[in-house]
Image (cartoon, rainbow, N blue to C red; front, side, top):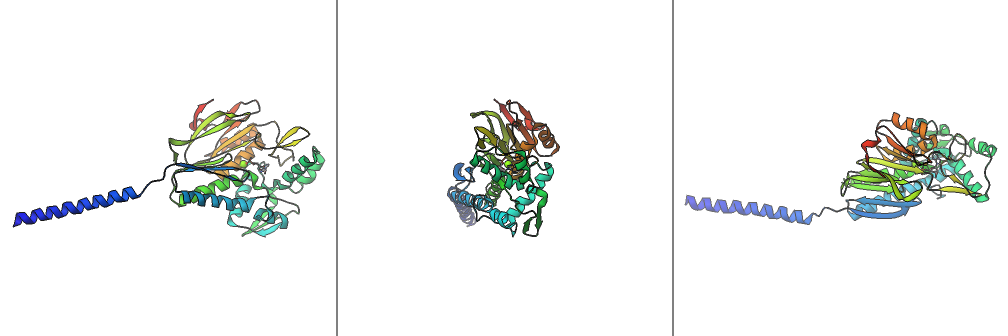
Length: 334
Ligand code: AMP
Ligand code: MG
């Protein structure tokens, strides 16, 4: 009798264990971890690329988050929040625009005004000059410069005030990086641990790629097919500002799209491209633009003074100048 009970008990136990194993096996089969997929969408004057280990609905939601940032900060949409602020000079803004303005102002201080979100009137002026095919004079630029200067932005609660009539914000040097950071945040909120978001050279690398750390190639400024350097990063923002992307062409002469807020002229001759590695894409984006204005010497001094920031400056004669800790990220040259 005792023996029979023991056999029955053993049988019961075995059945219970095996059913648990079966349930676990079914659960494991039912849960399919997504593999890496690549998605692209034209946005913000470029092609946004998301490569992630994420479910398709999470990718679509991430694009929507980026579209929202774009529609708040686009200078080309007359109804955007930034356009409304530029027209009215004072308005309540979203937490996103407030954050971009606050961070832009921080980077203006850091770069001694080389990065300046109030370059709007200069950008518009250069566009006008291109349309008229007239090379501006210093006198004309000086007139425009009267309404340029980040110190004349006031933020009070959620209200932003542009203190000089005619002031205009242009978030072109920071908004793409910010949109990338927001995209990464949206993916993280859905439990995504591995993703790369690239908005035309403003990148964030979350976790790892299919073959280990994410690899980012730095383009040769004069030959798009060539990679000058390759870096490996994890949980970092990477941004490149170059003189080869966009220009104003006036009377056959090329003028880069980054403007020196100290002179009103577009940055000419130095450098050819600037790549920044930073803890987030917003910082990398703003610093790449700011360092581009500062030039190789002052720019590299600034990079080396910042903890957690590394950079590479390619000069007009294609010489690579790198910050003290750059080689920690470098994979291969050439
Ligand atoms: P990026 O491609 O990030 O270097 O940004 C360049 C864009 O930023 C330009 O097309 C302008 O819209 C804007 N911009 C130009 N000069 C400056 C500057 N000195 N500071 C901040 N933004 C600028
Ligand atoms: Mg930038």
